[in-house]
Image 1 (cartoon, rainbow, N blue to C red):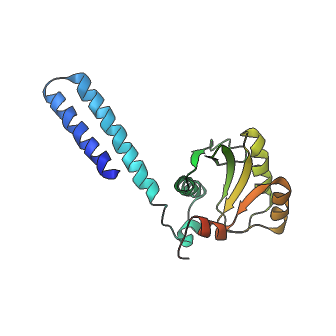
Image 2: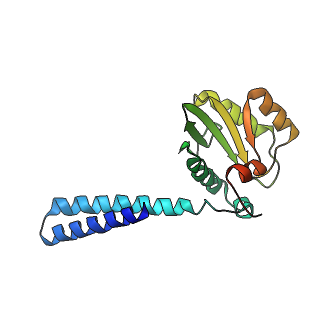
Image 3: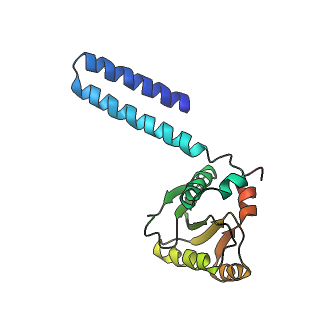
Length: 173
């Protein structure tokens, strides 16, 4: 895929330059816009690709926002359609996953300590707001006993660092 994108960028650049030299403004502008779009898509994929082979140690050092991006990339790799919620008003969900007609809201928690019931409450509340079928909380740590009990009562899926290691095939510490 990368070779195709780079070839398209080269061809568009050549067409744009040829049109520029021949005084064809419209073709030049269109070639420049398409070239920019391909380049941006290519760079975004490379940028997000760095998340595919991270160790748990590196994941533990991510910022909260970078952890959300990490989950975005990993869930995409698992075949989900993924989108971010608005950062400032997320109503208890950071990501929305879709697969086989099922909609799941995800609360991402990259912490240095175990996760309590607040995260489970937020995720459970977000189901109605986003019209989802289920909620999930994913953390790089573990959950308290209270969080497990509340999740069980509200059908919220909890993923600990061990679940992440297994499902995202994380190797190393």
